[in-house]
Length: 167
Image (tube, rainbow, N blue to C red; front, side, top):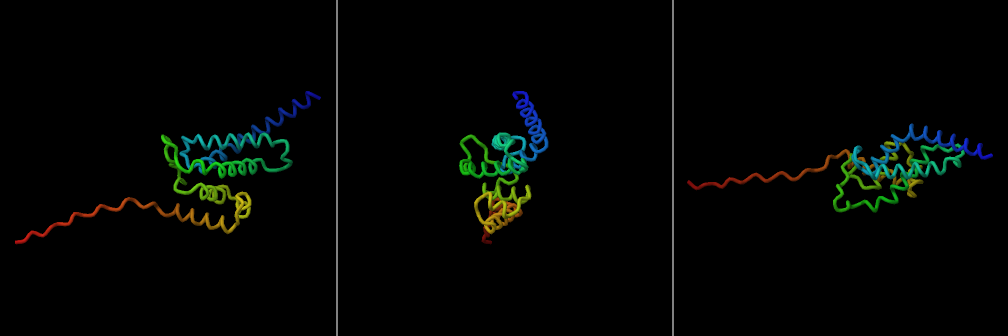
């Protein structure tokens, strides 16, 4: 009996390792987009990924045909959404996010990443976030518009006005 449990555990560990080897990179990229951190310096994204993978591993035997990638992605998104309000303003000494999506709010980033990078349908995104598909559509449209319009630079300096010299 004990040997059978050990072999199930070893099989489960191998299956999970194969899953992580195949999906870990994409999930890390998703987490990095959500946190708007640079790809080479992404501690928050790595933490989110570790939590999502730990949750997926804990649920591994109970999934019953459910897609482990979908489970990990949902956990990643929900965990990010719950924790995003803590990270709205940078802590003293912490640099502001510098990633591609840094100009977006956490909600906008979450919706853009789920809809455009992950290809999750509006209805599924809305259900995951507890909002309406119309709201998801509006936030996604606003976020894409923000991304496509370059940020305005500082106003040009006014040219000095030459004074007329009386002759």
